[in-house]
Amino acid sequence: NKYRYTLIVLFIILSESFGENWVTMNITPYNMEDCEKIEISEDNVNQGTENIRPECFQLLRVLGKGGYGKVFQVRKVAGAASGKIFAMKVLKKAMIVRNAKDTAHTKAERNILEEVKHPFIVDLIYAFQTGGKLYLILEYLSGGELFMQLEREGIFMEDTACFYLAEISMALGHLHQKGIIYRDLKPENIMLNNQGHVKLTDFGLCKESIHDGTVTHTFCGTIEYMAPEILMRSGHNRAVDWWSLGALMYDMLTGAPPFTGENRKKTIDKILKCKLNLPPYLTQEARDLLKRLLKRNASSRLGAGAGDSTEVQAHPFFRHINWEELLARKVEPPFKPFLKSAEDVSQFDSKFTDQTPVDSPDDSTLSESANQAFLGFTYVAPSVLENVKEKFSFESKIRSPRRGLGSPRTPVRGSNWCKALFLNLENTN
Image (tube, rainbow, N blue to C red; front, side, top):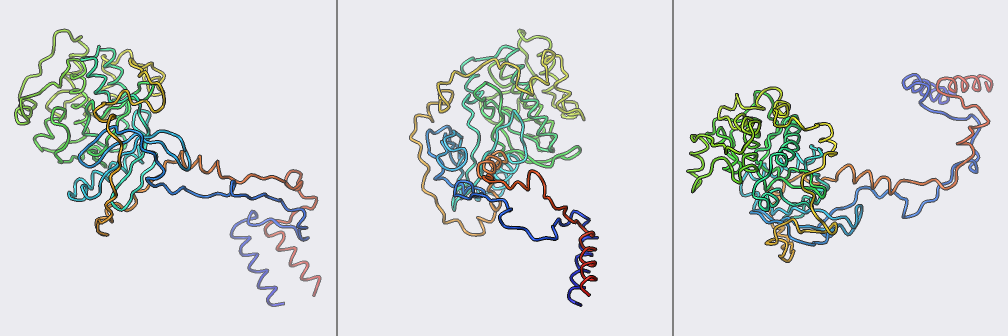
């Protein structure tokens, strides 16, 4: 009996600690025939997160090439989202680990893409690695670079520029809210989706954890779009992105950035010293916005205040923009790419798309210490996980009547059934 008393005391303690919902049971035992029956097959067993690797993707076209690797158009041929088209960015670890800053920038890009979800920022779908390479699987943006569209048109009309600048300002504002400075705004880093809406890409030069009052000193970006405070290495904050937006706006409306020289040094000198020349055909609103964005004194620049993007968006140049509809992508883009299929690459430079897509052999000779820099690189987007979860969830084939109608016997819960055990014990003594 002492063992029975010990067991009962234990049940009482658990019941009092966790409440009456700790357990529900019937005093009388279950008949196994009353239990729910579930049919199990290979199709409905939860297989967990799929193992993503290069072999899951078929190379279709080359979309671009950089110092550290290539960007391919690919089709997923295995697992969730099989058959869908993506962009695959492949980076060589050996090239990246040579420079600590490059390693930090690569990790920052991966982390930012995971953290930031916005209608005007490219979506990261997967991230994974092999012995010698890093892979980022991104949504495929079939509209190509805004740069290509600008090249074709020469210059944009103000209403066209206004649309693109408005969407970009919303993306920058979202990054700033997250404490992220973009620092590399230029036409080549602005992509268009299949409907013609903006998507910011290439987050390798972003700086994280920059909030009010915080500055950073890294010299980075593209010279023609760099703010003076970056060039002077005097410390910079999110206001540099609003200078770059002004330089981009000037490029859209005139056909070139505001300050260019015969070489790098002369371009820098002009950015730091030369007067801003505005073409006479620009409207007063456009001229005023350019002057406010391209102020050399960062603290007096439009967008440098506490309002950040809302200061820029309140300018009369954007007076016709309905910001709620714009964010919902309900505003018709000025240019909608003509695409024949999901695989269409007509909006990309044929210099790349005409190349044979080849992912070079994997160099897995990187030391263990070098590979330590990329721990935790793997990522699967929540949307993919949700699809996998739905696909492999259990499906009940035969249900017990007990589940729908309730048991004919009233279950005894919590401390009540503990008391019942006491009564039974007393009755047996």
